[in-house]
Length: 154
Image (cartoon, rainbow, N blue to C red; front, side):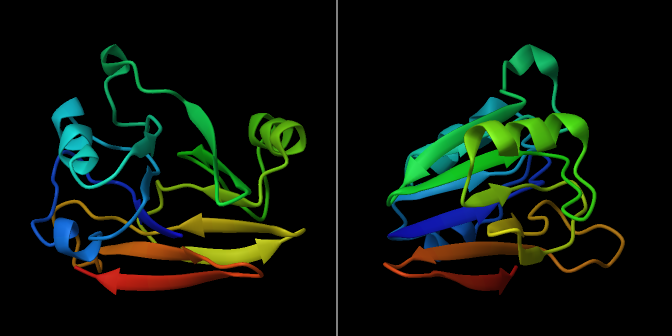
């Protein structure tokens, strides 16, 4: 199974995303989405699970966290996560949900590291270029025995 992972779009969907995400079976958005229309555009590609980021308007009704099971693996999405020092609320969610993967955003920096048997994954940020930082998205290839990560610079 191939999953598209994106975060921190900040109301901008790069025109390269549909081609990069072509053939994905699901899209995970780690927050700071922007307008709901952006999620509708992503849903034209594949089903989407998304969470609210710290810049998203609460009036849009985005969830603070979400879980979804894909290819027999549980994914937990939450926008602000520090994998080296989990906040109490994130630690409680991880203990309760027992995910195989935690997807997050916020830092605008790609991150993927397995800690305590859980893959903590940040695809970086996909919004408009700011501060000269690289803009990235990712694909996760869910194979029988492993999850393969492919990062793409926009």
